[in-house]
Amino acid sequence: MAGARDLAPLPGGWLVLEKNAVRLVDAAGTGRASVAVRGRQLDVRTGPHGAALAIVIDANAERAIPLRVDGRAGTLAALPPLPETGYGIEAACLYRDAQRLTHAFLVGKDGQAEQWLLDGAAPQRVRRLALPPHVQHCRVDDADGTLYVAEEGSGVWAYRADAEGAPARRAVGLAPPFGKLAGGAQALAVLPGGVAATDGNGALHAWRRTATGWSPVAVAGADIDNLAVDGTGRLLAYGGKDWRTVALAMKAAAPVAPLPVVTARAQTDPVARAGDAADDPAIWRHPVDPAASRVLGTNKKQGLLVYDLQGRQRQLLESGRLNNVDVRQDVAFGAERFDLALATQRDDNVMVLFSIAPDGTVTEAARLPTELDEIYGACVARPVGGGLDAFVNDKDGRYLHYRIGRADGAFTARVVRRFRTETQPEGCVVDEASGQLFVGEERRGLWVTSADAAREPRLSMVLAAGGLLRADVEGIGVYRGARQSYVVVSSQGNDSYVVLDAAPPYRVRGAFRIGVNVDAGIDGASETDGLEVTSANLGGPHARGMLVVQDGYKRMPDGPQNFKLVAWDDVARALGLD
Image (cartoon, rainbow, N blue to C red; front, top):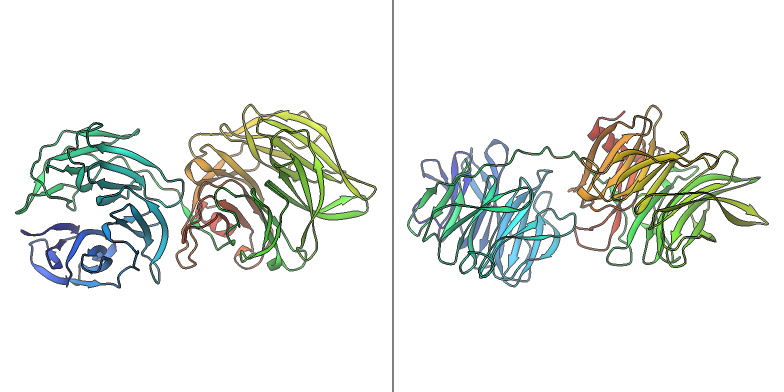
């Protein structure tokens, strides 16, 4: 393979990038197929039965070209170029995520970058992102979802490859005065357990991935123009004439079993405010037509949104900075009955009560003052004697248990109980069937106490933060099934959702993530604040109920936050639930 500018391993062969072509060769170096292109930056991801997907930059057109490889048949074909980015592509690389979906990163010289999903009927742009200027190469470690970029004059940086969640950048190896990469990073290769790069003088450097970052590894090599990794994980270096193997003591970390992934069946229209705006959902079931049910969602910069089950916005009530919302139907106040939603309003530290008409139309019904200084989370329940109980909390840990009643045709509220958590709470939910109140303390975990105003509110820890449940502990919902009931908790620290039994000893049934629905063009969910779940038959895919979650990062395309609608059947199947 003398003269090859770049290499990418395949089962039983290689893809070879030469001056004017990409060639498919077997293990003996015999050519089997080629695609004419004046290209640069070759990367590949293999699949079953000898299939593979590669990418190369067409240096003339400044377009990224995917290539389909069939190793068994010995064929290589160029697919349509990815859409124009509007900037010259300096670097391109592939990423295969936990769902086994393949993505491409396209990086411009000025730091503009895009991530594209290559699976499905046509490529879809997942997000735009900002990377350093003068990136020469990029590579992704699929095992831990790390995007490495080599910045000329600076060094190697590591980013989160998964589009869901907050962006993050960490230094791996830098140029003086902070590191040893003279002239910055040039060629780049991901190895099992670490990464290698060359500096501006052609010297080789390597780093082993640790629990806290990256540790330098001693390695010898000079006058190196490019790097590659063979199919066994060995490092190859190109010195201008041919490729050679480089001895490097590196060992891959033990693989971590990924959480099961479910996908949303629908998503709501984005909220009308950018930034951290959407927060908490609730579900209202239509009394006659389940398919006409509604999802309520708070926009903490604007008010209350009402959506249908296809995610289309039906109403916007500009009631101020609403944080949490909860719904109870058929609430009895003597002879009067109402479907009600209650939300916390942070401008005036009040509870806002909404009535819901039989056709799903929502109307503001009352504003009820509270004693709190920074009202935050809330949940509601129907006590045995009628009326509505509201549990509202403050960022300082205080909980106030209000009894909401009716007098002279108006809603009233009085405090019937007080308790607190040591640190900031938010999410809570009442399981009316068991009389339990589940309380989330963001940094510490999930607690339970009695929802009965006549009982002492002693908090007992159900599930501490750590392990599957990662702080912040956010939204909480109860799924009450015919045979078994579950608590669903948003584990914001690792973008997942934990499911446990709703009765002692509160056995943990597992956790899952919400991933990309390729066919529907719906992104995954991450950094979820609020959630709600119901076992009610809402028709169609939601005949066994539905989970609604707030999505902290809207992708495909980038946009304001929204809510994802997940069929409970999909959750039950992923975790093996009854």
